Image (cartoon, rainbow over all chains, first blue to last red; front, side):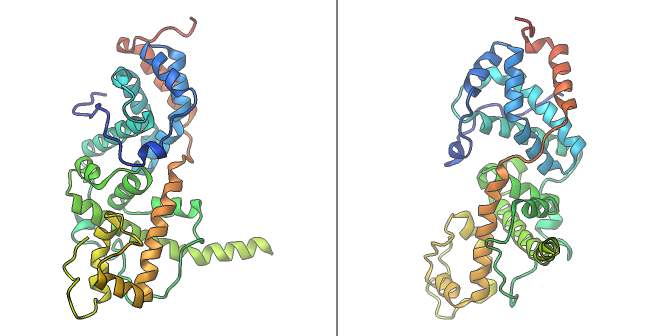
Length: 219
Length: 97
């Protein structure tokens, strides 16, 4: 796959991102060996990072087949360019940025609008997060498990999901997301806020089901 | 965070308060709201207070998702190996060293 314009320079790591992406045991040695073309080192790096790269692709694309194709592309690209990695940022940060850029290029080639104008300017009745005026006060805190959140994220409209995954999960800043998605910083903030509102709505809807499931399981 | 409402005498409506939320969260000011009019609204409006708590909770919970839950099929690595083998630009040493 020809990758043009893909940023291969190491990003300035956002505060906390090194903390969120700490070095992995054996990684540094594998990187150096991979730079020398050692096939076993490639295998080691793949084993260390395949799940996070694939999970990222799957969340961004929502499709197993495409996510596997992009995981393949990301690692092939990584192995081709690993010589340019200088260790100035966490390796996983570098790899994730490379992956995000590849997925976004893939989506652009498919002609998909990365930040949906409909979601941004004129949200549909179905997609629009509902205003909170006068709603009952049900706290989410402590009631949402990882599986429920994962499901809710998967059911977000693509534009909301993209910004939520990039910001709240992957830790990118709004100015970075704005560059990646070719939108304004304000747009990124707005999309993220709408994504969280929509998630709140989805998670509140799932609460009674979860409680019913728990009651059923207890019987 | 905007200060445009800080000197107003009328209390904020929920709509006015919620319009500020994207910037408030982006500024990392959750729980540290300093604008008096926003603070006053948050103290007196249970709905908006719950909304802020929930949105912060969702943002916090999202960090859990950084840990991967999905695994690619074995076919992915097989295709990567084929790609490595067929492209001389990788300059991969043979496995049997």
